[in-house]
Length: 293
Image 1: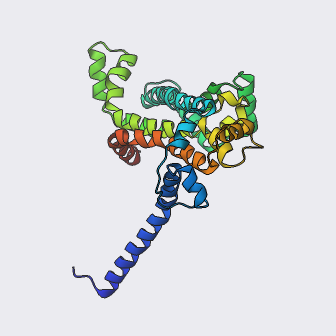
Image 2: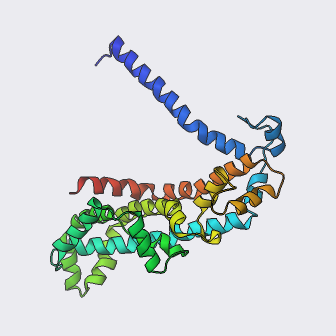
Image 3: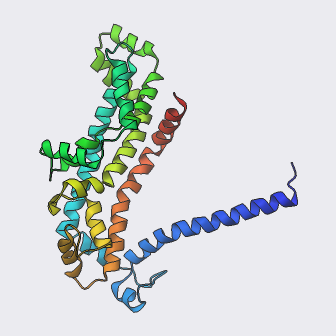
C-alpha cells in the first residue's frame, strides 16, 4: 500500500522522537564511561565536564583495583551472584518439578501456600526477626536464604515443566530411573532455556543486592559491592562504612568523580558479560514461560 503524506509525517515524527529518546538514554552511560577513562589532570582543567578526552588514563581503575575495600566487596557480590544463583535455581527447579507432578500428596496445599506468598508479604520487621533468630545477622547467607526462591518464579517454572510430556518420565521410569534420576537426567537437560532465563534473573538480583545488606550487615568487611558504590556516590561521611570509603578515595590525588565513574563501570561489566552467553536460551525461556498457563 502506498503511504500518504500523513503516514510519512507520522513515521518521520516517530523516528525523530525515538532517536532523541535513544540519545537521552545512552548519553549518561557514555558520560560515565568517558569520565572513568579521562586523565585526572585534564578532568580538573576542564572543570569536570568532558565529552571526549584528549588524554586517556587507567589511573582510576588501577586505584580501585588496588584498594582492599573495593576488591573485598566485589568478592562478596561475586559469591552472591554465583553461589546464590546456583542455590536458588536448585530450590526453585526442584520445588517446581514436585508441584508439576500430579501424584504429589498435598500438592494443592503447597500451591496455595505459594500463591499466598504472592498476595501477602510479612514485611520488613518480621523478616528481620526471623533472620536474627536464625543467627544470620552479619552473615552473607542472610542475603541468600531469605530470598532463595520466589513464588512467581516457582509458578512460571512449574508451567514450563507441565509442558514436558509425561511419556518421557514414564519411559525413564521403565528404564530404571527413580524420581531423582528423572529430574537430573531428563527434566533438567530439557529445561536449559528456563534455567538460563531464571538464572539471569537471580544473578542480576543477587549482584544488585542492596537493601537487605543495609538491614542485615553492619560489618563493612562483609558488605556487597552496591553498598560500597552507594557510599562512594552519595555520602562517604555519614553512611555505613563511609569512613572507609572516604579514606579509599582520598589516599591518592585523584578526582573523586573519576573514581566513582570507574566504580560504576566495573560494577556493570559482569552482568554485561554474562548476558550475551545466555541470550539465546534467555529469549526462548521467556517466550515459553509467557505462553504456557
